[in-house]
Amino acid sequence: MKHIQFYTILVSFISLSSGCSSTSNTHEISEEDKLEIESLKKNIPLILADEGWEAYEKLFSDNYQNWSMVGNRVRQRDEFLPLVKEWYDAGNRAIGSEVESVGFIPLGEDKVLYLSKQRESFLDQDTGQETIRDISFVSVFVKERGEWKVDFSAFMDVPK
Image (cartoon, rainbow, N blue to C red; front, side):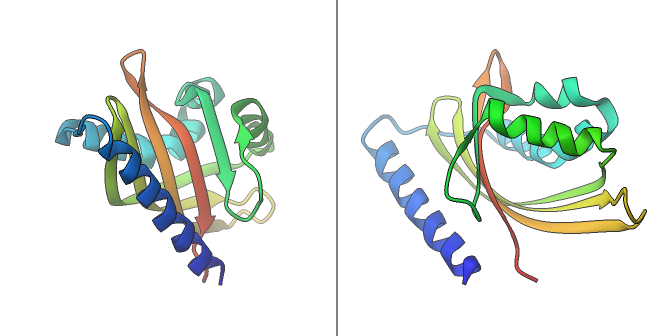
């Protein structure tokens, strides 16, 4: 049921986004920018593990927001990122990440809706075993000071 809700929300969001972009100039995203965004999305969990908190925190825009689709509210940057920091400070680290791009929808100049599926592997600090998460993402990326940053993300674990 949650899987169906996710896709209903996703289709509504895409319809709204597409409708908004049709009233203004048509924007395109270059293949180079698509590759940059895809690479960034894949490497986000690994950057946290390999380069640390400061490098990770810089990957998110000043106005970043997050919605975990199992909850009913959007969290601001200063509320969501500290939750990730707690998890990181507890010793949790990603050991692998794969991304499958579903689509890129330009929302404006230097603003892109990115749909993806991601498989993240983590070393569970309690058991020492590898944990794998398959996650569906809806993300908005913006170019901020010349670099792509995550501006919004919504995600849901894929039902097993």
